Length: 317
Image: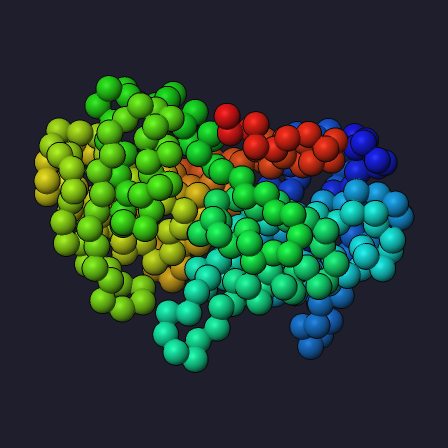
């Protein structure tokens, strides 16, 4: 594949090799040969084995668990490419870690999302491609061009194939996710309900009320991140108590930390659908009610359009 201004190279870190290989397969080009390993004291060492001088390089790396290791891999890969005279470096972040730290929740606390954005920029990235940022305004944290892609077209296609749309109710699990849920509901011409939730402390949530008539409806919860799983499990229980026929969830990023997978499998959720923006663990792969959708085609097409200077936003028209 050749872009408008020269050759294209794909470089992958260790965060999600399966997704990187799927993107490369879609683009019909191999991943560039690179060594990303650790010394005995866990320092990260990177060596790009292919010539990248004058090329348009896309670095595919989610900053998922272990977030700090994968972030450092990304920064060092970018630095190595910059010093190897790559013409342009695009950081492809299927999942942007630290995105939830996008404001000061209290005194003497950081805005870590801005700090990480600065680090990626100062390392030498020329632009960023990412998927479903926790808050859209995080694009403004980067002082370089940033494209925030949406997983909703992949989810909508799956929903259309699997459900009778006449009985669907799209549900936002909290007030903050209403815009995201409404956008998906509009695509499938479905009504919208909202869970009114009060969070008592980090990692825990208490469902207070369901806004909307969900009786006999097949409910689809929509959100960007599932971490502990508590919010979704509580939301599913609240919807079923209000007469919902069944509850499914479509989530962009399956963080699923701690005992989240066990919590989801033991819950009343009929099915949790996540994307492969974060590499699924073995527990996720064997879970009966968790399914993974690939966003390789979405990212591959966005990379192709970026390389050839075409519009990326038209992917979502």
